[in-house]
Amino acid sequence: MPFVLFLRENARWLSGAFLLTFFSAFGQTFFISLSAGEIRAEYDLSHGEFGSIYMSATLMSALTLQQLGRVVDWWSTVKVTLFIVPLLALASLGMAFSGSIFSLFLVIYALRLFGQGMMTHNALTAMGRWYAAQRGRAVSVATLGHNVSEAIMPLVFVAVSGVVGWRNSWALGALVLMVCALPLIVVLMRVERQPRSSDPKIESAAVRDWTRREVVRDPLFWIMLTGVMAPAFIGTSIFFHQVYLVELRGWSLEVFASSFIFMAMMTILFVLISGHLIDRFSAVKLLPGFLLPLSAACLALGLSDAQAQAFVFMGLLGVSYGISSTLFGALWPEIYGTKHLGSVRSLVVAIMVFMTAVGPGLTGFLIDRGIEFPSQIVVMGIYCIAGSAVLFVVARMLQARLQIENDKAEQPVI
Image (tube, rainbow, N blue to C red; front, side, top):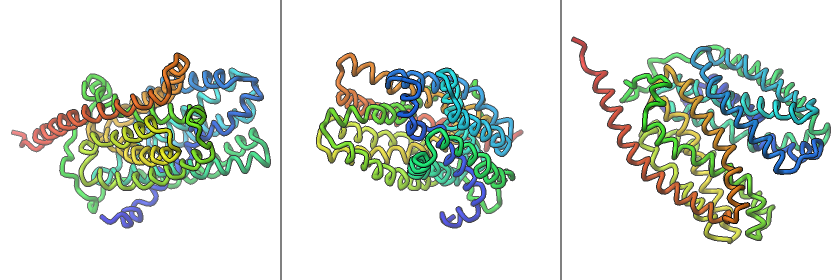
C-alpha cells in the first residue's frame, strides 16, 4: 500500500498516536531542562544537587512504570488517555506552584512518569497492537511526534515564558493539555482500530503471545537489552555533558547547538525510512545494524577535536535515533506477540528510563576520577560494534525460533 494511501486510510489513529508522543514533551528532559536555571535559582540548588533530584525522580518513575505500564493491557487506549493526560496536566500545574524541594521532586517524578513514560508507552503499544504488516509505518508516524515536539516546543516555551514567566508557562501548559490535547486525542482514539480485509497480510503472523514472566525468563531478551539500551545511555550521557565537551574541545557552543538541527533532520528522515524497511524485511532482520551508525558517531566524536566532527556525530546519531525509535516500537510485538504487549513494553521502557538516569551520573563519576570524557565516548563506540556482532547472532536465533513457532501453528490439528 502506498504510504500516502496508508496515511489517509488511518489518519485518525495515526494522528492520535502522534499527539500522544507530541504532548509527552512536558515530561521529556529537553523540555524540563528549559526551566533548569530558574529552578536552581529559586531553590538555591547547585548543578549537582538539581541533577541528583532529577536522577532520583527519574529512577522512581522507572520503577513505577514497570508496574503501571501494565494498565494498557487491561484498558482501552482512550481510557488510558483519560487517566494519564489529566495527571500530566496536574504535574505541569504542580511545577507552576511548587514551593519546596520535596514538592519539586514529586512534580518531576510525575512529569517523567506520565509524560516521557506513559504517554509514549500508550501510543506505541496501540500502534504495535493495531497493526501487523504495516506496523513499522505506524510506529514511525507516531514517533515523529517526538521529533516535531523537540523542534517546536522549546521555541514556544521560551517565547511564552519571556512574556508571562516560567511558572505561568507551566500553568498554561496544563491548560493546553486539558483543553486541547485531551479532547483531540479522545475523539481520534475513541474507536479502536480493527483489522480490515484490505490490510496487507504479514507472512509470519503466527507469533505466540508471551507473558511478561515468560519474557523475563527468556535469555535472548536480556541479551537484546544490552544493545537496545545503548542509544538511551549514550545519547543522554553526551547531551548531559555537552557543555563540558565543547569547552574541552575548544569549540563554539553556538556552532555545536546548530548541529542539533542536522540531527533532527536525519532523525525524521530515518524514522520514515526505517518504518518502510521494517514492513518490508521485519524488525528482527534490522536489529543487528542499528548500532553501527551510533558506533561511527561515537568514534568520530571521541577521536577528533575538529569542530566539523560535531555535525558528523549529530548526523550519524540522528540516523541511529531514527532507526532505533521505530525499531523498538515494532520489535517486541514481532517477537512476543500483542496480548501482553503493554506489560512487556512497560518493563523495557522502565529500563530505558533507568538508563537515561544512570548514564549522566556514571560518566560524571568517571570524569571526576580522571577518566577523560572523549576516551569514554570511544569506549562507547567500541561497545556498539561488539553489541552489533552479538545482536547479529541473536537475530539469527530469533528468526529460527519464530519460524519454528510459525510451523507449529500451521500444522493441522488431528
